[in-house]
Image (cartoon, rainbow, N blue to C red; front, side, top):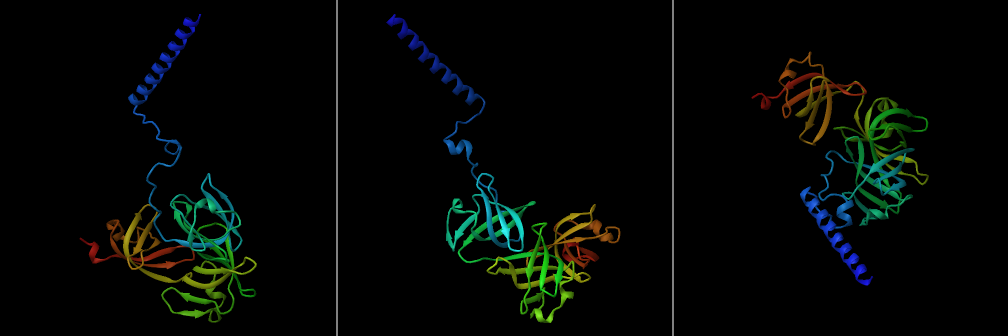
Length: 296
């Protein structure tokens, strides 16, 4: 009986070794490489994608929630709106200027977030947790301005929810390309509906946004001259994207190709001069020429 049990045990060991060997050979035949550990099997692949390109925007607020699994946080931005921001290993996190791990990010933290658009999502390039109430910046179009209480409502470019900011007397106001001035010299006409502007703001002790500087970028009916290179071109929709090499800013200009025969010669990289009117929603070309450097 004892010899029988030993024989059965040895047969089982041989079978297990044979199965293991066969499984290993099958994996190699299929080109499957064995995982070098739990992190290799389930973690991120080596080599993260490059950081999104484009202009960054600083947003101030408080963290409502952090989802480490989906790698996103919900930010309560000053002005009464909520914004979802994505993050990953590329995101740098600091507490009062000292680098800290992502896992230290908690709901309730006052933060200043440097954001960039990654396609249609908002990505956090860096997150600064602050002991003091943070400052922020928004860019968008004026929806409403109430002179009685100096309240400005802006449709921010990063969110469909409006941002409400108070513009107290004495706030620094500048027009793009012009010297600064005081808000006392400006009236509600400068905050007309559709005006494109950029606002730097801080938080008061109640968490309300208070403008510290307003830059008026474009008012409806204003003409602009853009000189730069064509970054992209869509003749079907009539969209021309011009990049000014002086500041590397991108400008979307709409045009009617039937009005501009030269548009048939346009191509990416072409050096152009475009005169466009801002109609309160977009830049519309009224003159379009190709510069000598492109005519080769």
